[in-house]
Image (cartoon, rainbow, N blue to C red; front, side, top):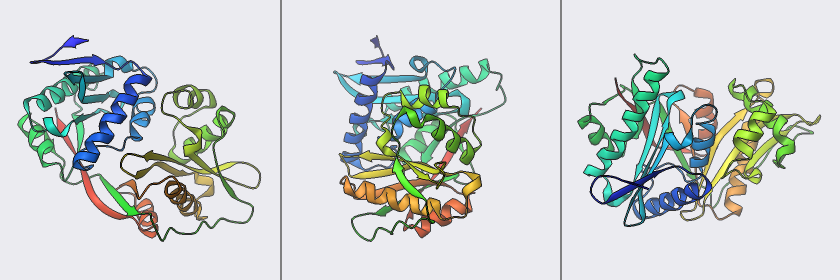
Length: 310
């Protein structure tokens, strides 16, 4: 473990034990001060293993900082997207330490972007509108916000009034079984988002990685056994918050109400496991997703804006 500023120490990401430590710390920070400025604990493995799949060494992209043996902050750099995340304990927000973390993340991202030829592209990080402290830190470091938010975090209570699951005749919903579903999951992910997943890639880069649980990935199955839609439900047992991320319907099966049925199933799944609140993010320029989430009872909680620095 390397020495940092003052009595802080840090080390690079080493795998499952660090993921658990990051999730436990994040859940505690949310419990103490609310989720403004923090992602959902279940989203961490998604960001680490999906967002950094391929050629990026995770031990160079992720750093964890400690004070007296306690995790007080961590940052994740995503060169493919030209962005980074940084999460700081409530006790160290708006401090010199936060600037240290932001400085490392921004410098590391810039170096990787330049290495890959993205010289003219600005480095970017997202800020919840409610997170004034982070916005001020970034402005002091030379970042500027985009004119409009690109994402909205939506939320609804799920203790009561969860919609019914309604499917076309012959369709069903089930959780993924395991690696035997890798080909079907790769196909529905790619068909929903235009990505390039293969069975081997999805198995090796997602299903075999720390934090993945096939019971949290739900699929709509057609009468012939094809996966037509999917979602992953992440659970924060400390704070009783569930998250949908991602949610997608294969383009060949859209406009059949599958997304609505899948989310109704997911809400019931979350509630049965003690979640009291569900969240989902929606891009502001995606009217179809926004309409679906409004129909499912979600209301906007706060917008998210990108801050950029060249």
